[in-house]
Length: 109
Length: 122
Image (tube, rainbow over all chains, first blue to last red; front, side, top):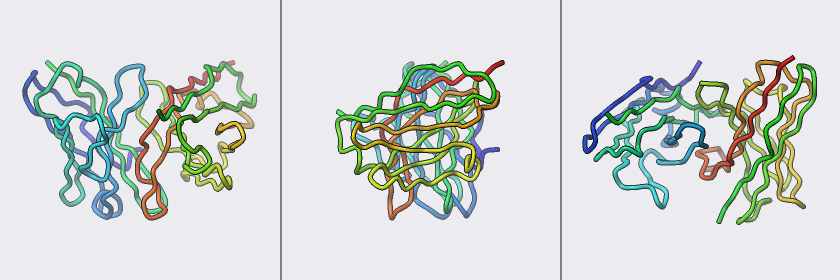
């Protein structure tokens, strides 16, 4: 059972924006600015997209934006492109342990 | 360029032992933690454990404590994940990844291996 709750699916048309939520508690997402997001295409290894809530590693397009409010973190993908279709996972430190969310499958319509 | 290259797919029987590997290159292997993540068939990611190769300090997620053992050989820049007695429920893809720590605690994984598929079946 995931400590972090994500919607199982999300979708949007090319060019649109979509936001994926990651809901935790005051012991994990709400307590630490250690939220990260990963993109995983089918059959591939995950790729880091966001760390420290809102920082982008080199090479990640600025269409990907991370934020947090209270116990919920969010990943917004703007200007959706076909290549953004993938599974997205959030992760957070939770005091002596780390968790991933259950994952959200993003479909580009 | 940082690279993590994992060993190939394995097919084992329940009760058998197994050790899979992850070789790092392009950075100072002994100076960075290495972690392992499980992905069961059709499921999400699970944080398993991390190890600091220089002194073999290992930290296990409670769900995996006692179920697996981490080790590392700095002379060949390789980390290992091993089982002493596999179960069918260990069937999964196992990824090694490099965790970055903040304030001494794991924060995020910045580089990932390609994954090793472990199949346990009688």
